[in-house]
Image (tube, rainbow, N blue to C red; front, side, top):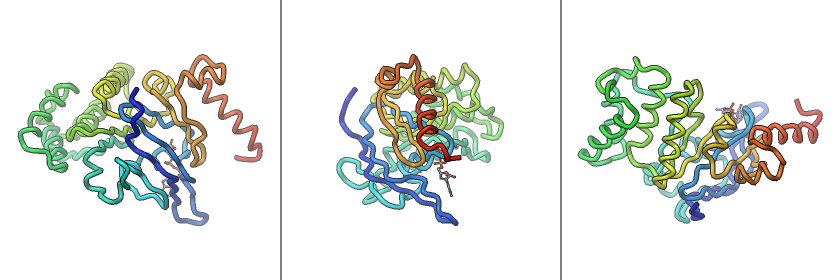
Length: 255
Ligand code: ATP
């Protein structure tokens, strides 16, 4: 695995106003390496979606910075967005447009040249078995096909970093495994993948490293192999459960 840093996340915090305010991220430091699959893990509310949304520039952080090629991404957000492909937790498809129109629109949004857009649109529809739906409205797709479409759209502008927020929720096992193959292929092509998932077997099968978030801070970041060895467990799910138990023992009054 290449150890070249793609993104340097420096002391990111995020607080949501309210009474009381919610401190969703409390100083996150993380290097994301080029070409790795890095999974963000954590219980509900740990801050995973907040962090991936900040990295994909959907939200600004409250403080801290993210460096790409040693420069703050906030110096030129538009250029940075061209290297990011974001697949959100809920498929946000324009249901008035056909699948093909949706993909063409995504390519034009990123200012890709018209010839390349058309070729990529065809290649991605083929890859994700969407050709039969090319002229169908987005509204008729099943959940699994919507997810395939979202992935195709995420890749239209050939991003360097693909951010997948719980991409396999509610997919049948066959489509889930297809998506795993796609993630492995992205890695093979040198694309960096930031994956948020609650499926520990998925994280174990796909990740070079996992990053466990807990109440807005990074509890640990390591390879699945190292974690299993350190905690003497045969799988990542058991490591995760053990960590949760340790956490409960440390904070017995926390509900
Ligand atoms: P899940 O696994 O349930 O998707 P998560 O780890 O992705 O959870 P976040 O969605 O990032 O967690 O939420 C982190 C914290 O920030 C939670 O306490 C949540 O209630 C809070 N939060 C998230 N979005 C907002 C918002 N728009 N306004 C206020 N609070 C928010």
